[in-house]
Length: 312
View 1 (cartoon, rainbow, N blue to C red):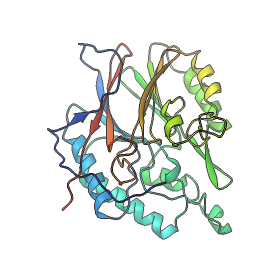
View 2: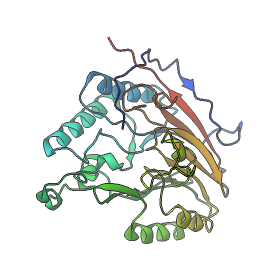
View 3: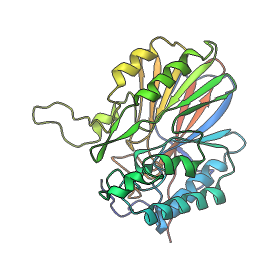
View 4: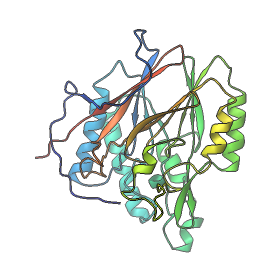
């Protein structure tokens, strides 16, 4: 993927927040039950731009306190662990934790991205036997209860999925059988009066998954990679039909933004804090995060929060 030099510069101010013109849930005058900042695809690495970018993004969110209750990290916290030495991966996690400790005072819940998984594209045989291989390192660094889990806030349940899996040196978007059984039980055991939000790094339903590439197949079909959209999306959306209390699904990964309503559920793809991997805007979408309002009646509003960097 393109890592062009950072081209767009500007100033960051918590008072100068721009909202991208994207649709959200219906406008309401009711007071939200709580607000959540969905920060995804930070891709932090050593260097002035990515380090300053992560710092300013978390400063920006924390300046919104107390109106923001917690942060959800949508995955790809670090630039890349799929094809990086152990020392390089440790360097990235150390940087992530250093900046997070310095700039964040809000509770944060993590989702694992494909670039957070270690060793998928490494050829050394001993790496796969290392206890930190695959998702274990990310779970450890984020202090997660597991690679997938759930938690509640007021009358909402949040279900965090693990959506990226190694596939012959690459990766594929889906949930594994163990996780599928867990998800079915989690949905069955949730009271029908409790609203559900599902988060995954890779989208389950998304329109912009078909816009990532700048070309179609030779026959004109739109090109959607199995790494850009859940390959089990048909199965998942059929499962969701049985649970009318599923209100929304959140994701990142694509570095693009959309909102799709399908069978009464809103699917939000929420761009990237890193934009074009710290190279400015990606296909017209500047570095940004999403601010969600969750309401007691199950409705949801989203506002994209855009910021700029000023580098000396």
